[in-house]
Amino acid sequence: MNTLHAEFQKKIASKQHQALSKTHFKQLGEITHTEIANIVANCKLNPEADAVLHQIIAEMTQGADVVTGKAKGQPAKATHKVINALNDYGRLFEHPNWIILK
Image (cartoon, rainbow, N blue to C red; front, side):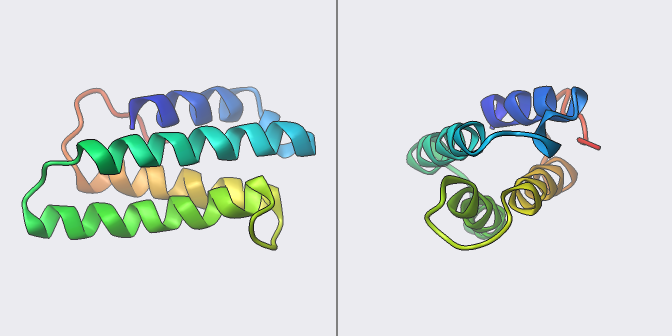
């Protein structure tokens, strides 16, 4: 989750996500898909927390699918969907030094 957070934090800080090219959106989506796969593979939570995390992951996946072109939609809005999911994660889980993205 740290890798995703850092990647999106960079894009937000520079407002790059508002003017990314199709190629850059796709790269961001691919990073998101890769990190989601890593999170799922290494997840060891109790069932209740796992269910919440999987809801967050579903939101991130939907956003990443649009950003990579696997689903229809607007990449900039889909990027915000991933950002909102990352923020939900930060609000719902105790993750040291997590910063809510704006």
